[in-house]
Image (tube, rainbow, N blue to C red; front, side):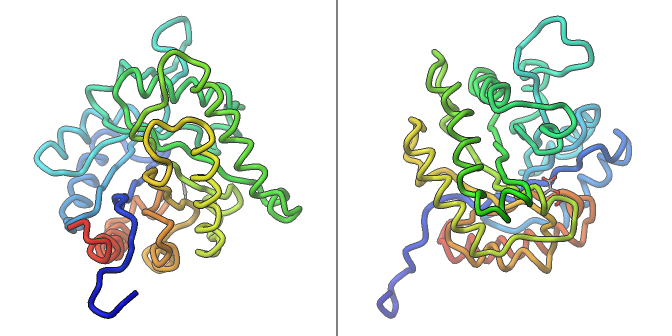
Length: 271
Ligand code: PEP
């Protein structure tokens, strides 16, 4: 970089999304959402809160006068039908702008497959939800040197569902690289490993007909991110933000994470 010139940052947005998982009730969710919105008003950072589905309405109402966006933690692969207890994209698309798709806790607990996840991606495109698609390897896969292969195969299977279908992948796709061994464990990946995986992810997407140039797809890191650990990830130009679990329930933590994300946004010239 020559002195005085701007760094060659990518033009991708900086995004911090909070996944509240199975925490909060409609009443306390709206209070928490308000407090987080107030504490995180940093220019240039896209903020998303993903509460439990029963809290979508109260959180949407609480955030109506803010630019904090709302996401759902999951949608079903079908729009309607005999699927007791499930929630589909057309049911939530008035309440949520975003959808987390393929979270590892759903792969683990509901045995979600890449094929189902691919169909969910199609539903997002069909019903106007912006997907945060989660991919990531287990610890034994990383230790066996198969982290890259695992993530590439997940994407290959998911994107092949999209390529083969009449509806195309959403052109506003966001990927969350979430090594499974780092989720809720207090362990984090190294920033450099996450950045390397982000490059692999974009290369894989480029081979699978992503509507926009894969270089424009934001890649977030997720896995025990806190206000102390976020620095390492956002220092990497290939990482565009974070999907935050446990720490997203704490106002001070979210304030710290978004404040650091604001520095990245400013450095990229996106404000
Ligand atoms: C997540 O749920 O996506 C996540 C990353 O959780 P945690 O930050 O708690 O590890």
